[in-house]
Length: 206
Image (cartoon, rainbow, N blue to C red; front, side, top):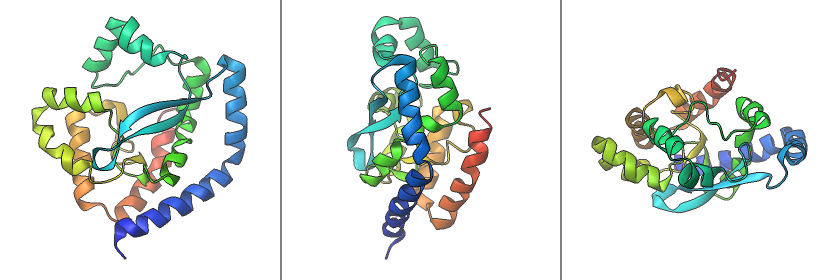
């Protein structure tokens, strides 16, 4: 049995365990979001998965309801800042007060366990890219363009090299370089190390 096959069993087993362990989160957070800002409870966004197949990535909604419309259609200055920051916003004004608290606890990522169970993601892997992000960022950092095909040979992960190594402080080219190395050399011990580093990375957001 190859490691990718073993990894799939680990993904399913650990995801089911973590969903059960954190069942109160699944029950309480939707109610709190609904009381705070109404529907929808979940936010979904198209991402590029393994072998370039797009899928809907799920999160608990932490932003205003029309967040994507605000960014791409209504606020050109915010979009410019977003792209200048390598498709990241350090202090995103679209995030609600409750949403910021949820993000600081990384609870917003929990629905991605559904993506893992569906086989679209893994517990550990590169951060899921946005299609338009890849098109624009590989122009800005042309050295990364040949790397993307290799990076997309593996499933994106809930946690991974980027998430445990500085997140927003890391530029796109450095992130892609880390993802490239992971996609070529990932193994059980590396995955376990990333999983062990994840709680510390979560706490560092406080």
